[in-house]
Image 1 (spheres, rainbow, N blue to C red):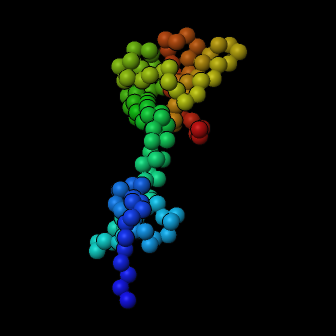
Image 2: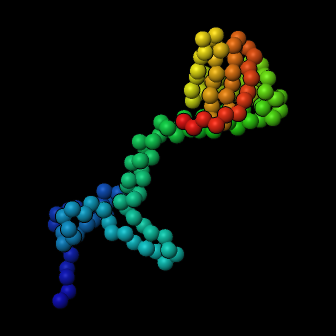
Image 3: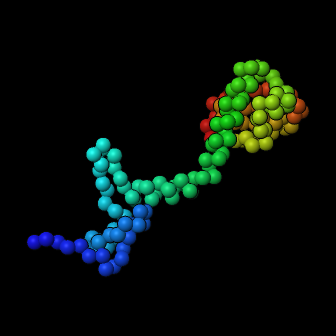
Length: 137
């Protein structure tokens, strides 16, 4: 006996909008997984949820991109000029001091700006000392 699929309920996949037959379980919201000849798997449910997660994590992406850029620039500056640098060096290497991962101020008003992998320590906002650290945020 041949089973005929009907589409009277007009149900569609939430991701690709392909029709879902009426004979399929009512809780199904996505297409069935499909494996291609080359071994890749097409899965609308995974694609849909990945797009949702990507949108939710968008603000964190910019923070991590900034931290990665600052790590690269601080590493270059440290290798080129050593640990003692000036504000002009930071400007030359496009290092943005006001967006670190963490700022710590001691009682003597000595500021330490922590980025991923490197930190800047200053007491007068003109001269800085770069040092490596192992902090995890």
